[in-house]
Image 1: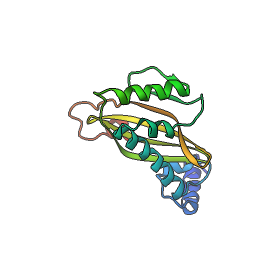
Image 2: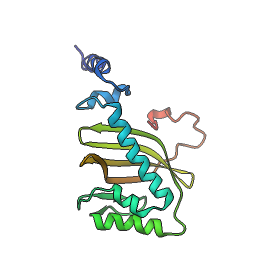
Image 3: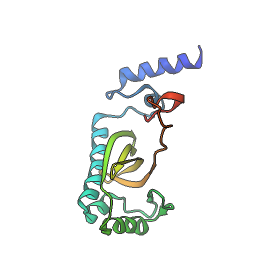
Image 4: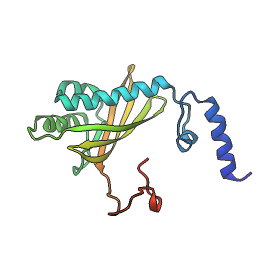
Length: 171
């Protein structure tokens, strides 16, 4: 049997067993089927992050992060930041800035694998789209952020009506 046929056959079996409908390419690589509760919980933690940011609520935002020195963050245009004090301090600086941008999370997509999960989304920062990943770890019954990264999305060639042209796609 050709590898492609084997992958399709395995994915069909996983689709029948999986309680959550996922695109074929994501289902193949998951170690276990994600439950709707896992997906809902991590999406809720992700939404709480953006809600705290929008409200300028530093205490709520800081509480969402894991209390570990291994947390990290890469803000657009910044170098990598590692360590709780540095990461939380960067968010304090951003929230205290009177010119801080308004950020809206769009198209969140959750991937959960055991006690680790991530939400891939589009951040609309003052209307400009950024690709973002929020990586969570399930700690003491709650999803806690361990890494955040966002960066600019390369613009498609001017005049291209179809973003999937030339093999490119958003999702």
